[in-house]
Image 1 (cartoon, rainbow, N blue to C red):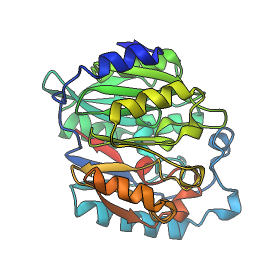
Image 2 (spheres, one colour; image 1 turned 180 degrees about the horizontal axis):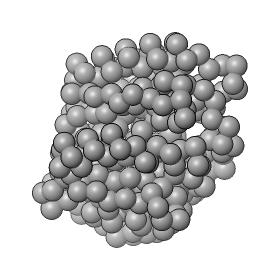
Image 3 (tube, helix red, strand yellow; image 1 turned 135 degrees about the vertical axis):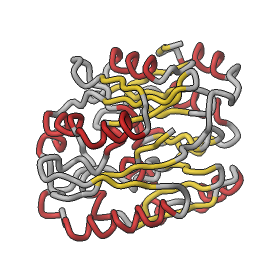
Length: 307
C-alpha cells in the first residue's frame, strides 16, 4: 500500500506484525565533515541552516569524531572521508540507504534535489563498500528525474515494513513510490510537510518500531499526525515547538533500548518527554553537535544505517 489516505493507511498498518526485519541496524556509517562549509544551494530550502560565519570546520570535525566513538560503543560504526567538493556529505543517509528484501541485502542511491549533493551519489568508495565488500545489490535511483532523498524524506519502521514519507521539494510522490518499492515496504503513508520543512526525519522519528517522536508543527495536515500517533500509541510522543526547533525530532534508536540525539536536542526535552521515553523503554544518549547543526541537520541526519 502506498497512499495519502490516513485512515486507510492506519487501518492497514495496524494489521502488520513486527516480523518484517530487525527493528534497528546492525552497523552504522558516517561521512566526515572535511571541507565543511555553507552549501548555498542546500540553504535555499533548508531554514535550519546557519549563515556562513557560523561554520567552524575544526569544531565540526572534532564533534564528528567524538560522535563516531560514541556510536561505536553501541554498534560497529565506520566513517568515510569527506570531500571539500561535497560540503553536505556529512549527512549521508539522504544519499545512501540499505535494506533487506527477500533475505538479500540491497543498497539504494538516492536522487538529490541539488547538484551539490548529486555529486555524493557518484562516490565509488561508498558504492564499492556496499556492492563489493558487503555484496549488496544496487538500486540506483540517482539518475531518474524524481527527487527522493532516502531516509531524510522517508522515515522507516523496519520492524513492520512501514514507511512514513514527507513530501517536499526534496521528495515527490513518484520518488516516494520508488523508495517504497526499492525497500520492499508493506505500507507507506505520504503526507505533505509544512511550509519551510525539507525532510521528514527532522520532524519525525520511529524508535525501534515501538515508539515515535512527532513534531506536529512540521506536518501540513493534522490528520497525518493523528494517524501516526494512533499507530504508535501509547508511545507516540508529541514534541513542542521548542523541542522541534532544537532537533529533538532528529533522533534515532540504534538498539532496542537506547535513543540518540544531539546534546542541544536533549537539553530542550521537557520532563514529560523524558518520562515518556523512559516509559517506552529507552535510555537517552546524546552527543554535542552544535557545529554540525549549523549545516541544517543533526544527529540522525549524520547516521547511515546498515541492515
